[in-house]
Image (cartoon, rainbow, N blue to C red; front, side, top):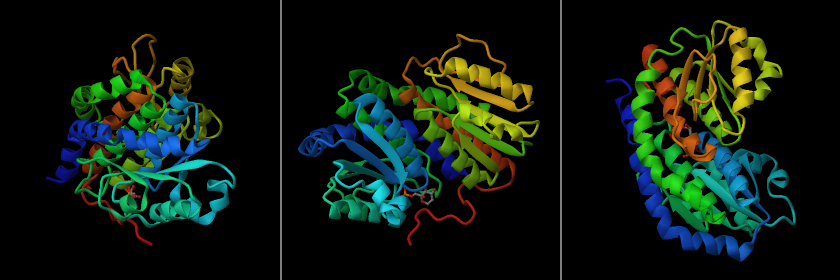
Length: 345
Ligand code: F1P
């Protein structure tokens, strides 16, 4: 069946999350030593494609939980503008994400950091890859690697490692506990997401994915999944940014998928009203059921977890939507056009 490999990997995510969390425990002491030796004043997360997008979410959560400055940059920026990535005199730690551990730009970013004496840590699914060998410490997602080109369980399981890293450095027992519950919650969410997304946007001309804070990286990943698998026009924005120009494309052919946050729930509800006023179809995935909304489709996960952990639970919705739109268009999600699983320059 077309896309059967990708579908299996989407369904396998909770298993990969458990394995990644179990593996992290073995490396927790080494993580602490790497950070404590340096006491950085900034952590730079980097990667390419999906690995860059998970870096966005990881950086957002890391700064929120630890209070330490964190930002995400595409690895290619460190090749083109090294001074704006590795600020002189700053005490940095570089966290590089890569499923394959062989992507040229990411590998070069780590090597450049090492030359400058910056400690490096990688999140990867390939424990023996060049990236793992080049980094001071490799945090591995042992079951995250896919046979598919498009990243699904590798994305989410490396993000689990990134969130667990934030919980470790912020000594945040709540986030640690939430992460332990995530595989069970993920199984429940997968059962909802897959059938729900089957017919959404079947005739739409464009998809807009909206997310703030930890869900912003998820919105970008949703955009990339739709682009890679279904070759449909897709964009990603911060929710309230959408009014500042992009709203011009809201209309009957537009499906807006909003990944809700507790932090911005009221503002996001108002945005749903505006989108509906302009006749866009809105899919709202959010935490609770407290406020009624006019969204065409509204899913309340009610999972009782923070925005950070919930961002992972939004992924099955994004992945399923892209999967179904690809299958519906006669495309094979297992064989995305023009793509290879690794880009080597
Ligand atoms: C990252 C990546 C993927 C993308 C494509 C090429 O690879 O950019 O996100 O889907 O298949 O590679 P990696 O560095 O995580 O291995």
